[in-house]
Image (tube, rainbow, N blue to C red):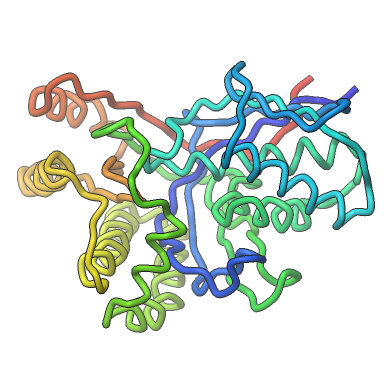
Length: 319
């Protein structure tokens, strides 16, 4: 009997923002992420008379289901297997709101697929499989910190674990500014951002920023990690502002949250922000400061939702 696969989402500290090959989901840059314990997806795959997809107990159709079915057919072709499949997923991540829900979703789906067909793949191959569903999913195969090396082909573009059991005091506060689906998808945003006159500069800085972040992790240097993550996120969103035409994922409360992080840091409460493709802000801090920072956000925003996360584990099969 097929088992349920659980994968946790990740937050890129050095961002992936641009495809070299859309079909193979090959990135133009390498990326580095932190897997999070608070957000995850559970997926089970079983044989069925027809292809079906349920998310959080509800039958799904349309583009979302089509994406899942196309992925499953591609994986069947890849491994020479057949059959209609029923996919049941439970997603503990706010979908499409800037918290990289696809990273856990497709990492879990890849693991569930491999288990269903008893493929016996290693984690490198599983990362490549997950990448075909969503680029960021390649990193959610691993716990702690991982790196998705850009590579130059299907064979060479995969993630690997950097440190799956980090000895580092690092917490992430997910501040939910807006729980609605974003108007510009990540895929579209990436393509639009290539028109920015600073896009090549972004690419040229990638190798050095990856190396700097790896060194910060090796040294357990929170200040260096936080400042570099904040810089990299700001660089990414600068591309959206300077694209032709320009656009942004920010909302007024996004700017307010950024300003609050900067103010708290000046007041001696060290924290840093990072933001993916969406309005929601993630705050990096030490565990000893998380409650104080949460209190500051709750007193500054009306009905704000904040979830605290630590390091998450690698993809697993549940009994």
